[in-house]
Image 1 (cartoon, helix red, strand yellow):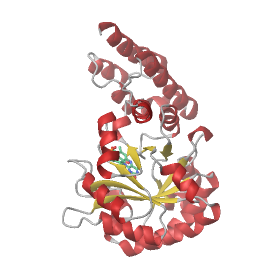
Image 2 (cartoon, rainbow, N blue to C red):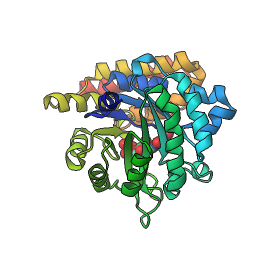
Image 3 (tube, rainbow, N blue to C red):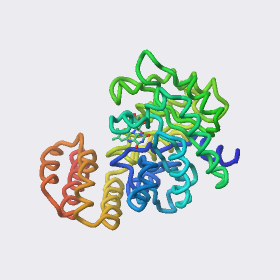
Length: 327
Ligand SMILES: Cc1cc2nc3c(=O)[nH]c(=O)nc-3n(C[C@H](O)[C@H](O)[C@H](O)COP(=O)(O)O)c2cc1C
């Protein structure tokens, strides 16, 4: 097991779980761009028990994505234990527990970041899930926040408790639940957590380019980094960060390669979900892919009313290749 944990966490680039974005197709694209570890969107343990087929679909992945983590959320140890048993059918490499989600519908049930206010139940969850996954010989990670609000920042103590309960690695997104996704994440908490636990720490929050990736490693001493919003519309960021970390070279991905990856993203989603559903689900990705281009707003407006994947791709391609011609 220690070998496995090191293989997943020693100076690695993780793709953050982003509900509504990091589905099977997008994870494959991120993997091709250099993500080392990818994580499913959060999956309800209750859903796995009571609506198995639909929920299990979120846990499925292509082999190319390994190492692959399934992320579960839930409020009670017994439910999480059963959910973990079901999730293991998909044979993931890591099981992750969500203790950071700030959304109302999750916290009102006592799950996600609400668990940071209930460390006793969080410990029971870790112990129960650990018992299940030990048999499968895969590590358990826990994804946490800074705390509930600025008056109850407990990431370091809470992280230590999760380590003692059996977590094999911890990912910290150092914003409080009250902050949701606003303001700056407090990387100092990652530094403190890293000094306080023996298990690997994955630093997350506001990594958006090569500089911030480098700084996250250097400033916090974290073992691995996790990138979320920074890769939306920009999955090739993994490639440029990886090249930099491995060679010190600052590189860019050329527009032809970017459009090839976008085409592949469309095709994979199309194959998996059918044309109509693919287009609806890809709209937010299209908005991200066209951000920052002159003429991008016009293209986005068209895309929002168009159901032909080929037409949409042609427009995006013209944006990327036209931009190149204009310099
Ligand atoms: C649209 C969206 C969906 C998210 N979904 C999840 C999720 O399913 N599970 C989770 O643990 N975190 C989720 N997060 C939080 C991210 O994984 C990450 O911790 C956060 O965005 C901070 O990292 P970043 O600054 O790199 O984006 C989500 C964030 C966003 C913006």
